[in-house]
Each structure stands twice: as structure tokens, then as C-alpha cells.
Length: 202
Image (cartoon, rainbow, N blue to C red):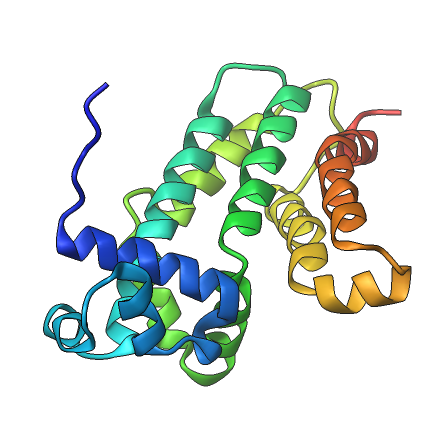
């Protein structure tokens, strides 16, 4: 198989994802990103004048990827339990690979909510399209009457909290890095069962 040669811009974006994942938005430095991409800092600034511009591109690319995957998952013609399993697996996997994103979103919600809204509007699959498919999915006679918006918020909260609160929870629960990773993998399997038990007719 022929290995694709990355352009300079693609190398920068890949390097930025690595540094943002490792240090978060605030902790990342342009020099570190340049070093990771194996280019000089002047060239980095030529392509992306500021760290904010670079992060915006990385963030938008990540959102495009996850929204497309989540829409495909919710749109699939499979039973609700399998749909939930796939949805949660995709979403937690995304958070594990992009752990810098939740903290950034929370900070921007407080400081600059308009920016986050505009970025979400630019996604190829809008949240409203995703919500519509989720609403259709819960119209099942075997399920309790469920507000799809409440279901969405519950899924979001149950998935995101253990990722964003990892340092605190790992300390409180006295988990090693390996033990916490196993804990997250276990949650991927247990959450769909937990949610289905909550919405399935008794």
C-alpha cells in the first residue's frame, strides 16, 4: 500500500492534535507544535497566525468527524439497544482521542458562547438532524414514552463526565492509568444496558 505524503498544513494539524491532546489548549505552545511537526516556528505562523486559528481548524475537523459518525450510527436501521451501543462507543472513543475538546467547550460556553454556536453551525451534520434521527429512534412500542432531548442530555453527561473529570476521579477511586482505562472500556459496555433499562417498558 502506498503511504500518503502529508502536506505541510496536514502535518501541522496532526502535530497540533497531538499537543492539544497532551497539554490542552491553554498548555499548548506554538513552538511545541512546530517541533512536533518538524518545521520551524516561522513556517507554522505562516500557515496559522495564532494558536486560536490553529485550534479552530483542529476543533472543526474533529466535530465534522464525530457528527458524521454519530449521525450514521443513529440513522442505521438496527434495534435501539445496538444503536445505543454503537453511539456510546463512538462518542466515548472520540472523547478519549480528543480529551482537550470538552474543557475547551466548557470554557468557551462561559466566555464566548457565540463562537461555539457558530462552530456547531458549520458542522456538515447539524445537531437538529441528529436530534431528528434520535427522536425517530425512540418511537418504539417496546420503549417508554421518552423525550429524545432528555435522552440525548443523559447520554452526553454519562459519557463525558468520566473523561473530563478523570484526574479527580482517578485520585478519589485510587485507579492507576491502566485501571482507569479499563474502567472506561467497561462503561462503554455497561452504559447502553443502563440506558435501555431506563427507557424500556416495564
